Image (cartoon, one colour):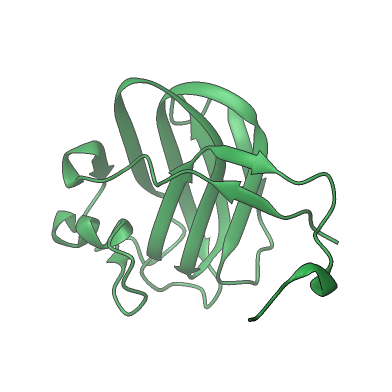
Length: 150
């Protein structure tokens, strides 16, 4: 069972921090918290990799990456370079939300390299991508009995 944790706010809060290979008009959806909207690539509907880059203006500490409402089957996440310093990689993903937790690292950039989609040969889609830091990690999950609904 997963351990409960609290996270800080998303470290990405403006489109000037985001770089994409195509369709820059939808980058604002990567952090807008509206699950009905999302970033969609344009012209990357095969196994041609599309990259989303989050660039920080100062060294930033991260320990968590949440990728919601996506259609990615094969993808990798790197920091401080598009193919170096791997945080996560998969070739057989079949779920539409991915939670990546790792030891705290200081980064200047995060790169999501989307290679293939679950449905195959469709545009890459990401509803929201949250880059944040863990604030508190519980040693154990609190008991349901400890909650007071009064």
